[in-house]
Image (tube, rainbow, N blue to C red; front, side, top):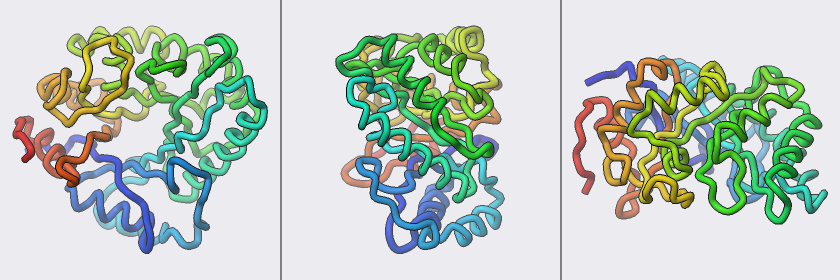
Length: 288
């Protein structure tokens, strides 16, 4: 079994143990990384940092030899920086993203994953420029890196191409505070050929730069390449398949990067312990 793989999953964060409970859940999966939301991803309600048992969580991470950099925070879905039609949407997005960035720092994490946004009834160019304008108006801690996630291209989503993300990164005022989260399901659904992943990484490096890649979401896909649908499948149960996902997980250019599973529950139960074990053993086994 290969224990060198930096692998974890999305974990819950809820009362009464909050971040401590998130770390405990990750450890129960035999993970050495995790991703959490600092509150419900669908709304702006947030409990105070004092109640989140951050010190206990950090102590437990240290006890298990897991660096804080392996804790990934995901920004809530309701943040849409690309909306140029409703100024109030942009204002809420900016304010809330700033709050999430400071909460990320307080947890001890470095990387905050963000969906770039959807341009709704405007144009792609307007949406891209609106994201840049909004990002250039916010103040985030220097210790935090916002990672724009590659998207499947559903509807008017921005981030379906490396060029769209590169355009944003090239125009932000503080580029050191920004990077990329690459989602395997999303890039497959957006039309990239993950079966020739070396070529995809070369393209990424040429357009964006591999030094900007900080997080990988390791997900299978229920859809054919280029479907633009964004429907995750369990590892080895989708179109991408176990062999390809395993080779991505162990790609020599990605060894230092945390991989996070966001795969569906099976019969109401988390699949993450079994999926992590599969990837560590490099051997597929159907989860029942």
